[in-house]
Length: 502
Image 1 (cartoon, one colour):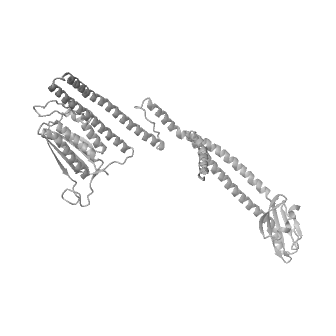
Image 2 (tube, rainbow, N blue to C red; image 1 turned 90 degrees about the horizontal axis):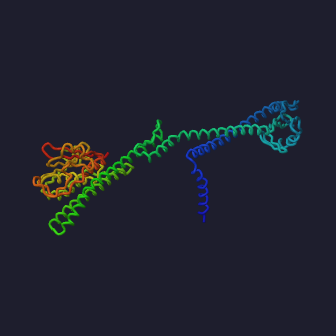
Image 3 (cartoon, rainbow, N blue to C red; image 1 turned 180 degrees about the vertical axis):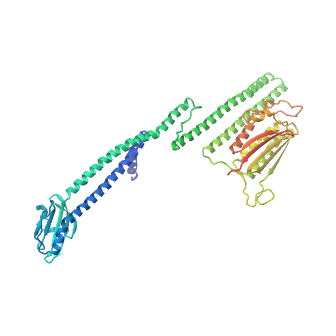
């Protein structure tokens, strides 16, 4: 039961705030700043009123002391004084020790209260008489005749008039300042939000010309300029990603068209040669090669998509994965073993070598002497993709009996994966575009249905042209580079360099 009123109060508060949410940002800024200014002005008026009241009261007490002091000084030395009435409409009364009023310029209603003042302590006080308030100063000079009482009084209405007039003036001035502040807040909010309006209008153009539109960045190095710069960088990354996806879809459609057409033709021929077992078997074998090529293309496209998705997550603030040198070395050995299974069909030798980091203070390899194991922004899956794609391409291109050498070492603050084969290499014209998607040497575009009598090549599905593109994507995601070159002695050398994680 106690929770219901609390929810009601919360709901009421939200109900008061909800209408503000429907206002524009400029209106909310103006209302908020004006409300704060109003609170500050009210507090200032109250403080100033308090100060004025204190100053006026102090001034009144000073005047009252000045009115009473001449009579006090006279009575302290003269027991039978001849007192003259004060001037300037001063209210002063002198009461003898016997209680008689010796001198008085007080109004009759105040004189009637003098009897009670003779017994009060000396000092300043407020008395109320017949609805009027007076500030009085009471002094008790003593001489041979006894204890006298001197009273000086002033009507407090004059103080109230001064304070009220000043408060009204301050209130009107504060109201004028508040109105001016509200207008200035509206104008400043309008000026401050003008870049936002330009950004909004430019953002609306994105749907019309997204490849050219860019949010304007103001000359001031402020938060809006930083926001525009960040959004422009985001838009640039989005355009690049969209362009890559569009290009990938276009290229994939083009690459899929040919094997699908071939597969369709092979199945049609197989249906025509249904009575010829040998011909039917040949058609089925060729169809398997086409399906294998399609499967490899689909897997490569999926691998690229996952790499790019991981890269986007890291750009959005995701923690990058780091792996130690030896864990990556273990994966190199595992990947080489998998490549050997493929290479055994062509009697191709696949060897590897691992060169661990050199220990500080020692002459041999290994971690010791305070050396920290290098770590890289590369997981074991990425290393497996590097070795499998590069070495697998080499096995496909090599003649029977060839060799592939894989090395993984740490040198100069980076990990270096180098894969070399003793095959025919690639045309020099292919090297500049070797890591682009769907690019491969012309002779690699065709599957070989029969063994090549000169090289000993066996039937293998044609490459998708994505293997080296995956290699470059994995390397760049880890902050590294990938390159290849023809070796003078014959063969191809692919080098991937990955910097150590800081």
